[in-house]
Length: 278
Image 1 (tube, rainbow, N blue to C red):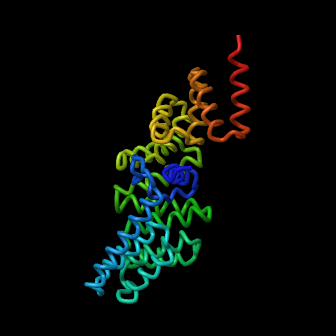
Image 2: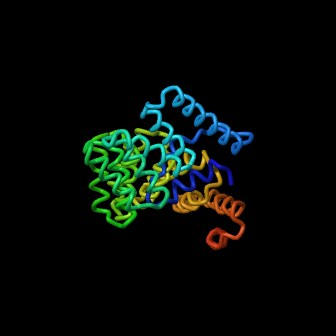
């Protein structure tokens, strides 16, 4: 599995919808992506550390360093950087928010909630902290508080595409598909290549019977990664509903080329081929 495919799968399958990379994944191939990412990581971190060597009291650089560590999944080092900021400036709402995000990604959920609460007590208009706290509430199955925080995140930044996307996902879980589509629309208007929102919008389109709209969204997702199994399953179902049987068969066969022992794909392929017989 390629790095890009793994990122997209995580963005689609994580129920909290907290992934922030879907809009940032470059649509290009790399001859050696692992080496490329590692090389870039070292260069970026060394560059910031070099700047800090010349300006060691610059707290903005420590925040930048922490964010860079987070970008490369080094959450412990990120927390250390944010702690340096907070030791010098206890009112840094950004450092609290980012530290909370790192704690959350480490699975330290109560510490994360504390940091989000403190961040918002310092700056009650901070959209990112509302969004991050909503992830916590959604994770403990408190949709009411999650939706309240997402409303605030959007109120204080109508360009917070992740907040629209997550609010759409929660509405989708409650079968409010028309409202969910509206939120996904806003998310995609802010980030047109937001493949996660396109994928989830296709689900609501499908539930609403807007099959051609669903197919358009799924085609965009699968143009990026033609072997993404969850999207292939939905597209095959849409194609069956549109009576495009051969295209649906092709999608089930693509699934089996990716996952040879996928029982569901085998079953659907047998059913659709039997139904196709004169």
